[in-house]
Length: 284
Image 1 (cartoon, helix red, strand yellow):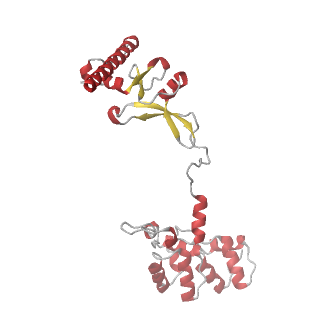
Image 2: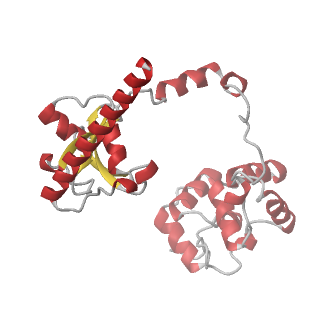
Image 3: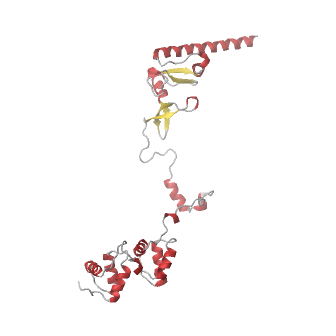
């Protein structure tokens, strides 16, 4: 390729627009500007022969693109605007034909700091625009309709199906037995769960009467075998948890079952005594 295939004016145009541009783009811009028909290969060879660079790591590459006045304006605008807006502003002010890619390349080569995330993220202490406002105060009617279409409705099942019915999970108990874990089973959608030991008991003996609880004989709340479950009234449960009663579960299944039966008898006896005292008081 002859070294002077381009005129001086064309070469100047090529050098000015080379920063950040692909060779194919340069060839197109050159042809559009001067009505020529240079190919990508021709422009690539010319750039190589005349040391015209487009890459971002070439020393002093960016200085050829803008004058000092133009560079000063770019540095002033870069932290406030996008690369495209900077290019539009420079083009309008100085009659240039700069592209977004050229501005980005120039900023990289000359270490011009742009907006970055710091200019667009929500700053600490700045209140949200919708704080304390109703929808209609900061959204259009079309926006509200679009938002309602994508809202998650009560009882709606997630698109991925959610947690399948029958799933078991360990959960920590609250109250007096806080920290103890027991098994819960999902029994219905959208999010209905029940304790497994109650389900096991009811499957064998029917619904649990009001005022009754199920106790694990071996004190292991994760052992939900039917043989490890025992039905107690709340009164009987109070006796079991009363340190003064000197009745406690030992971990031996047979012995503990006997203890639970003794607790039932003791609670029944106490209830009978209260009934007798109540009748005597009424008759006296």
